[in-house]
Length: 553
Ligand code: HAS
Ligand code: CU
Image 1 (tube, helix red, strand yellow):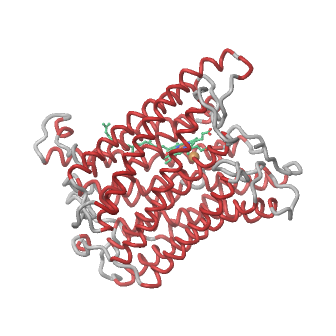
Image 2 (cartoon, rainbow, N blue to C red):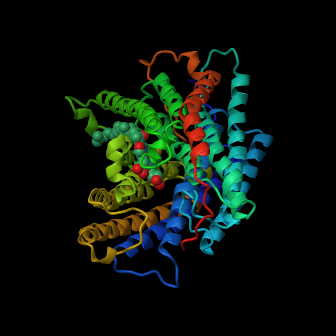
């Protein structure tokens, strides 16, 4: 892979575009993290919010800023830098698309956030009907989505340009750029669902143009998007695991074909599975729920392939360094290097996080955990540990790479410390959430003693544990913000590398079919039509009159 050795210095203009996204991401982290801290305090029963601020308002701030804004902006910052690094500097027009996208997303975020802060949009991060927000909230989200299309198109065009320039060279396209394109295509197809719901239902409804909306349809369109959303978060973390970590540990990418195949499987199976979020819902036939459960089990496969590939990569490297015996290689890994260690904590968290997901997806078992705080525990292990610790681990070299500074030894050590703090806080908080969920504690619920019901008292010790864990997590966020500010403005000038792994010699040639996007997109469309046509026809033809909407806050 010759392209990996050249182009180590980033183009200043591309760096600026990437950094703009990363700033918004980390401001969201701070504010969203603060909201999280307030929530665990409220739910401990020891604290009431001042100034008439509502619990659900804070919960909306938390979910929107961390689940939607931090993620999307960090992902785009990382992806822009990745494409620029592996396919080459953006052209002026591609970069312009990046900036237009950035500003649309930023203005949209500001508009939506304003409505939430004014308490006009306390509809949680999932914002489906029948909760009804102010129209500016939906318009803001539309701008975020449209902005992401424009910015994403810029990244894809750079990749297309690479393919044109290297046509007939026999080379496979740069793996990291390829992965970015897969993630963006998945995002485009998935956001069509949420765009349809916002444009046809929520926006006209909140403007008073239509009186009622079909709730089941709104939820179904949201979850068509909502499950792929979680993989839109995950795939950039997998990019780091597959492509960056091998270089950081001095090893090699285990297999180029395996990596590409796993991404293509995500493209196929991320979307036709959304109904696993609606397994307890009326109005969708059990057969179709079961079919989407089966498809959900298919989307577990590329994660298992990833786990396999990570173990193989670690073991090969550890043995190369002289690790002996069954587990001797493990000790040889560069434990002190934050670029490896912080994402590694994320990988470890993904083992229980993913296992919990398999429980959730197991049709009957879903009845036990649905709408309990177990689910909150699940996604704090997946998105809020596996994924974001990987993002942070990447930010610790990416920010100095983009700003022309270096990750010093002391900042590196502080990063490891933040990772350990995060792991500690999250272990406490998410274990308590899982257990409390199993004994029935609801998610998305303000503190309540439920009229003195004895079961509700059993939950309280776990809610206090959540407050302890959440406080540790907030301290970790403060440490991370300090590191980010240092890396962006104060760390010593220098050149921090953007690590890109080479493929292992044992990995055979990559079949051309893996780069044939047309084939995979056709299968994707077929799968979506198969999984969703009948359920959506059923919903449209059998639903009751629809809802006028509620404002429960
Ligand atoms: Fe999930 C609910 C099923 C993965 C996020 N999920 C959620 C929600 C969120 C979320 C946010 O089927 C709540 C949505 C809401 O607000 O209502 N989830 C799954 C399944 C997977 C899964 C089957 N989820 C994720 C990921 C997320 C995420 C990833 C974010 C990034 N989830 C569900 C279901 C629900 C759900 C139901 C609905 C529940 C309900 O009723 O409401 C799978 O993708 C998981 C596969 C993963 C694995 C793990 C592989 C392990 C790896 C690590 C290797 C480690 C190494 C380190 C190498 C099989 C790759 C080794 C070192 C050592 C020391 C050992
Ligand atoms: Cu899901």
